[in-house]
Length: 201
Image (cartoon, rainbow, N blue to C red; front, side, top):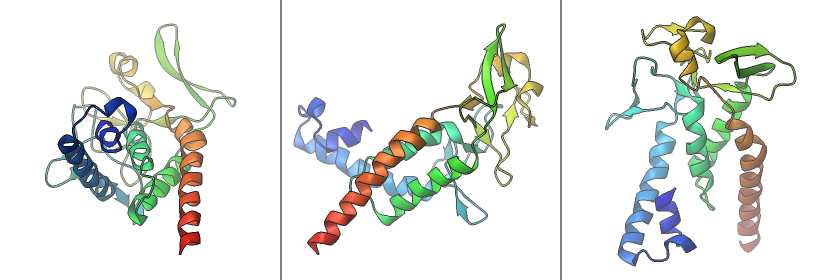
């Protein structure tokens, strides 16, 4: 995002000389196709992204014991927002954004609240709760997964040790703003640009 702002000559970065601005612009041009290439595909359907990748091979990688190879609902929000910054997106970028948005819609968790009760993070049933997403989803099954320091995958966050349950963001809410605010604005912007382009042809 920083390099994108520099490349676009945003007001806060007008002090950057033209040589460095062009380098930033080139970096952004490289980033977009890299991001669309690393969007994970499951059963022929594009989804979201992993939290980390193996350099060069661009394959999903695990990190700490409680961070396995998986789809990451949390980190992927930032990637989608970055791709949305492009005012004239390529078909690949449009497909990446639309696919990610569709994935978020399919995999939201409703009727569940992730909250701290008497000093403990816990899940409670609540029909009025806004949608949430698990931090990690299992490749293939799309089931939310939770992992303690032993590295063993669980499907219920209450089954991992207290220290990890209380010390990590196992559920995220950021996709809500992405779906209800960011995506509609992006869709209108892209549709408007397409209509304007068609009118000039």
